[in-house]
Image (cartoon, rainbow, N blue to C red; front, side, top):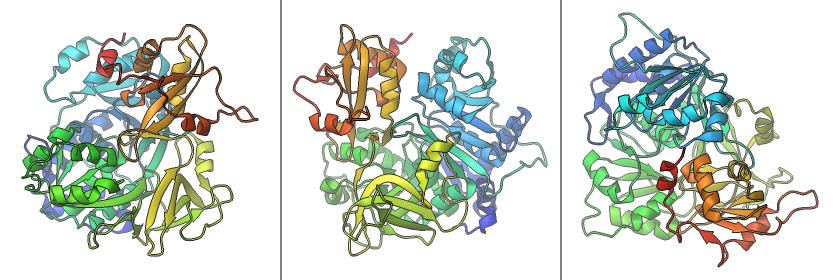
Length: 547
């Protein structure tokens, strides 16, 4: 396992050290594809970095990346980091206002994008004025880039293909970065406003990857299977970067499928993986077979590990589930241990790198052991937690208060020092591992003429620790829930589109005129609430009909 000095906690240094130690060992492949060795990937990344430098990318520049799970998306991330630039890899489901917000917030001049997303960018061309040039690439297995590109036209943005992997010029070296330099901006949805761009220095991304490699006890003979989108923290740092530090292999899938999960584990020869609670519940709900435990998987990091299926999941698939707690902003301070039996809770504080406390969310004063309080976090060394929300100083100031980062999560600690997650503060909605901003849904709904007022809330889904979206509307004209849903499908990423739509004569409000969402949550889903699943509405068909 790599053990670099702090001043070399950068992706470029980690990759160079790994190539020196085990350059010809296999590193990364797509499911069903051949592996790339560490040395081959480094050569491809250096060639791409050199090409991007010719495009004018300099240290400190922010470059937006919008690509599906593929090796090119990974190479873009690595190449930008080796240049000392900041990769801003965004959700591939973004469209309309969320897409425009991410590009404009990053203040990016250059965007690297999968060809299948060009149509969405073309729809927003007029509202991303700082963006100048777009380099496209194929981020799908079996589609024609030429035909998808030819069907899209831009009036202002310069469009060109991303250079194909070659070899770097002899002797060329990238500028590199320092541990304190900004490596990535990852957008995570706010609870009451637009998505916020979390600024992660190189030292932070190295630390969360190092901790993950240690806690999962990764070895060089491990194979790590991931299916989470590469715009998320977990596959990037808990998996890919952690595997690099340990010298392990990574097998990347394009998307999650509960039915295909076990066959893909076997096909990859995977010994390690990650998952989120609702995904594990979907896997557990598939028909059990007598040979389910006949697979190579031995360790699975998860947040959360749904307690009502945890023991049976381990039994059925013959592996250990390791529940953790973390956030993009503050890494993963809490882990359970592979050396201890399965137990409820999200683990103990395992690292000398962090401090955590539980405080009263109104006073910021500590609460007694056994009492629920807001979980707050800070680091023990510089540059290892987020450096704020890019372009959002007020949001940064609100999160960093009284020397702590305030997570907005409620938890309690037992007498043995194990932390237990309770609930979330604020109005955040969590659906299928996506944090959703109610604000974005409400803004999109208010653009429809039939909506006078609205409020979006989370209601319990059929999975533990998971929400479905309920939109409560005060109509202004003749109202049709199906028509509004079609409007929202054109305006929002699929994971933000509500399942339920209800109407009220007025929204409950506080004396200061704020919507009382707690009252709406208490009301919840009623017998008369419109349910798109009950009406068998297919979001794919709605999206396919977008203009």
